[in-house]
Image 1: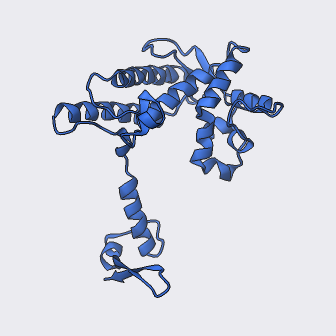
Image 2 (image 1 turned 90 degrees about the horizontal axis):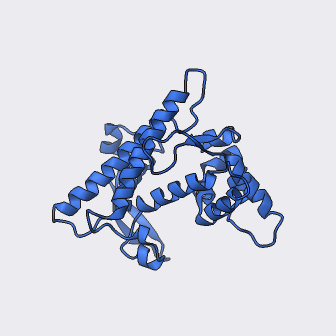
Image 3 (image 1 turned 30 degrees about the vertical axis):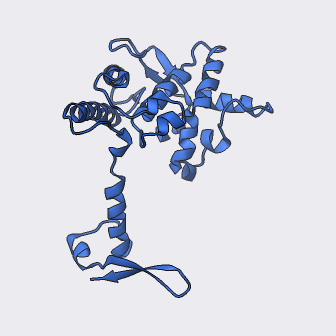
Length: 249
């Protein structure tokens, strides 16, 4: 996102989905989002949730994930597709659509989210022949073709017209790993369903955050810090009802 914001006029060139061999004949530019936002400012009824801070953020504002995700909201995609009807070269809506569907499939946290939001994409995985797994397989082939196309168009003095090499590798390997893991868990007979949103490292990251805090807010903790720092033992209430942590070594 930062690279896109630094050069908003530079397009992302990507192949048509779900082809695994199509050329990079579609383009997505961040300026398309800005044009949709500028048009919304002139109307009373807004067609998207875009804000000034989401399309023209200051450097410190770029770190806000929720604000960045507004650019890929379903209402934003609908607005981009409407904008594309007037500009045949504007494929930003198609690119954003792939992004939203990918995030929705990989971010299933509860059994009831799909029913609550009336979204089949957010239902838990219960079958190995789920159409979403097929879509993820197609997504991996599409991303591999996109990566290969970017390499052909990039040299030492030219910036990649797509994602970086590291991002491509992480995207493809993570997606393939999740697909294989879902199929393995469901065929093992030990799991009735799979929630993809549980495949994350938030718990261990929070644990190491506690370690860093207990070590005096050190960015890097050592084995000595873990051994000598006090650990939370229990919670007790004070006379005014406030909860306090009791530490022990």
